[in-house]
Image (cartoon, rainbow, N blue to C red; front, side, top):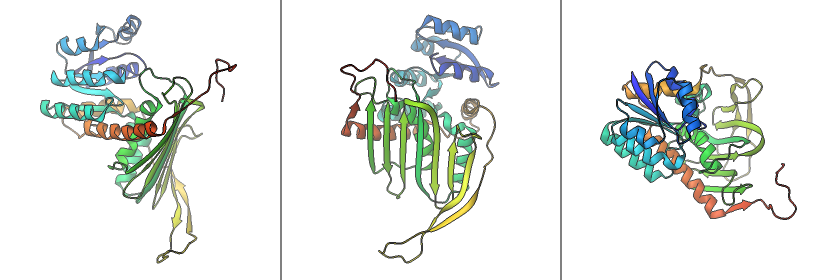
Length: 346
């Protein structure tokens, strides 16, 4: 059994603790949080665990640890993961891996040197739909991927140390990176800030890749409705995953366009392929429980990780490219001067 400690018991920590405690491969032995009420809540959720106010103290001093799960603010990820790896612990880090790709590369190097597992909590890859999409790609059911379009919207949660790109973006970018191991050649992005100046809570981003395909994203903390929708266009089939649709199903469409051969430079009208659609089978169960089980399997050497350190770095590189485009274009500010009320309605 793998003895594991949990650093951070805020928004995501309770989910990690519950799933680690429920998995037969793990024994949760310790948890930390700087807030006394959160430590008390962790103890109530897992009776008998040791409690620490400081995550570094848990990592440095708790005896018998084999692994640590880190669910603290993003700005602390690098230092905590580095400490854990250098102590010889396996590490699971809440997304994103850290704040810079260079830090991520350093963690990957330490993990390799210490022969320890470094994994990122890219939960979307472990959903039933995420696993089905991976299987469709591996089985070449989509054909050549030509575009990727995703919306991830809700009202909040506003984060203290990251903008909406770094909060919601890693979900979609982890799936994108799993589909295509490619860094974009051109990135455009725009952002809008309604609350904290210079910290966008709405971001649109477009990525273009050398192989000819493109991706578009819309992330928002300012939507009155919760939207989780992904469309992937392929040369053979098109895929739609609308998590909050009535049936919530993944749909694979035998639809698209056919271009005539030898068209030259003249304008053409494509032919339309309007076949039916099917619902690929998806595994039931909680994605985070599958992720935790995958972490155990990787530690025991049974599988190679689909969410390892290098993949986490790839997501960081995509985040950095989009952040650089935001910095280039500036972030529009909501005008809250004059007689405007203290609440915002859209």
